[in-house]
Image 1 (cartoon, rainbow, N blue to C red):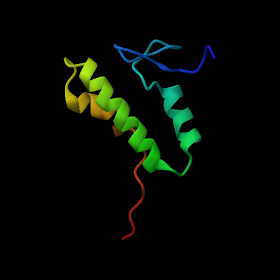
Image 2: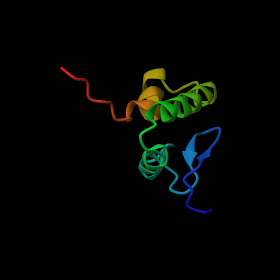
Image 3: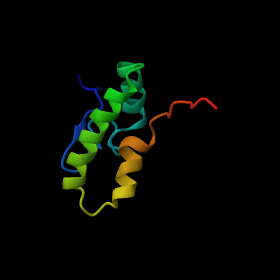
Image 4: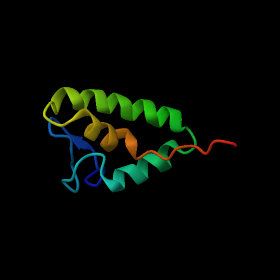
Amino acid sequence: MPDDHLPVTPDWICSTCGTDWPCSTKRSRLLEEYGRDRAALGVYLAACLAAASAELRRVPVDVLQQRFTGWLPRPRRPF
């Protein structure tokens, strides 16, 4: 599909909009796709982060972490 917003490696840019992957559209779609299974989404994105960090060696690790997993909503903790 032409608007799948897939990653294009080794630069890890979006195949549809050309921005850093995961782009905002892909983030929204991933949240919808994984629904309540945020653990599985985290595992998927962590695997993408590991692959991207091997290819984007000049990008600081903390920047990549924020880009790939830092945007995930955090569950509320009971007081």
